[in-house]
Image (cartoon, rainbow, N blue to C red):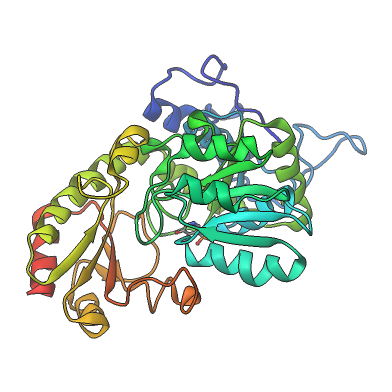
Length: 392
Ligand code: PLP
């Protein structure tokens, strides 16, 4: 169902602040009982009194479910948008987006350091179906402009990127896309809507893996597409309903539960990441630190202009190559060796053999001694001790 976010003046909103909307948008107390938490409508279907007439617009949960609607309204509100669509995963959202916007013969420009799963979907699934792609450094607007062709329909941006944390200029990319008659999508997973609002900078679509910061507790997989464009919203809805990559009611509820505390978690993620960066920058076993908050980071100025802070993700390379990097990853105790990111617990991983193995040998290959940290919200003294012990 395409459910338009009622906006700050809507009846179910009692304030305009980010956290107020996270806690209240789409989440009025339930009519029947006054339940403060949105109920989990764990039902596949909805009774009708007269054939074809639904009681509240719901007929079948693949097409729409009240718990999912609450999540979609809240997601739209947090991105300052009119329409939100929840999916079963970030990849299901990406798949729906690509099918909704592109047809065989079209072309897409993608970052040369996109998330490996995004690259795999575009290169291994969509290319054989006739969608062409060119990967370029999205940080270089001239390179993006040069990659655009008459059949380019979409520019795909991820900023900051996974795992190299490069930063692209959203307003600049939107201008290039719109000059070419293409749409700009921003994968806003790393920043979250708390730190960055791509639609306000000119993007047409925001994509999230809500599995990460929005869900925030490493207990649910989900994805989202958010837009102000009614036609796109209807297309996303049609694709979600037709292909069925939607979240179940309990997954939607878990995501909604996580989303309420996004602002307080992100503040703490950022505080902790900044302290971790300080430790890494001064450490003799560390070669290079990738963090957009560092003044020497090539995207620092752009990040400062479009993000309110620099996030909880930190990548770095170590002295000693891949063997040493893999050893460091298995020496930490608090930083759990695991894929994914954005949860309350700190994670460490080796992108080359874990999350980004699918891009080995391509333009998107990552440095062999790269380690990626998702800095959690534990006590910072414990996190620093853990990292020091693993590196020393
Ligand atoms: N986008 C980014 C930046 C990601 O890091 C991921 C997963 O790691 C995805 C999209 C895919 O999301 P999901 O794992 O929820 O399908």
